[in-house]
Length: 115
Image (cartoon, rainbow, N blue to C red; front, side, top):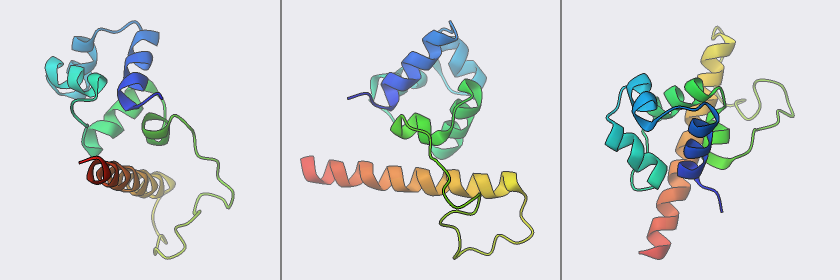
């Protein structure tokens, strides 16, 4: 099964970048980035956003390997939030954060089952 580290490695190779290049672009050390690819460390939310931007993919893709499809427009599943007055970019950031929190919770549940 392909995980976040595998996807990072694959995306980096597609752009012909070294780990050092990516690390510099996202503001972390090379060993830190290498640990992301090895699955020994997980990037925080801000770093995930930087990686998604660098690789021109969504955070959904980084975390799950799949892009989300919008069934109900840009405000899908956000009906309980007051998004009035927010830009589309701000709404997208909220959605990315929600996906990250869901992914992180799933990771934690998996660790608890195995440990």
